[in-house]
Length: 76
Ligand SMILES: [Zn+2]
Image (tube, rainbow, N blue to C red; front, side, top):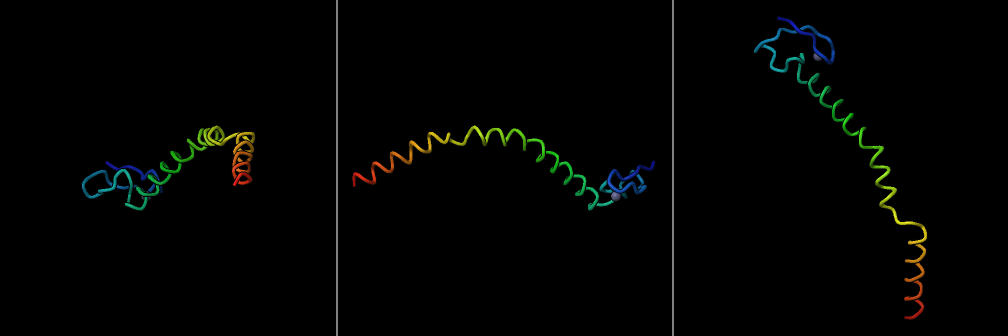
């Protein structure tokens, strides 16, 4: 039985002589895994941007904090 490498489409024999099947080589296996990793990284980009935005304090909060620190500085 022969299959085509999903990465480079090279035909290889499906069997013990092809330890990286369905890939023709470790390189192609790593490329495929890397593409999966990239896809997994790409998916949470949009939610993480939203969560970063919610984690950032409001400008009013920053100004209040700076005002507090300014008061403490002037009192000392
Ligand atoms: Zn290949």
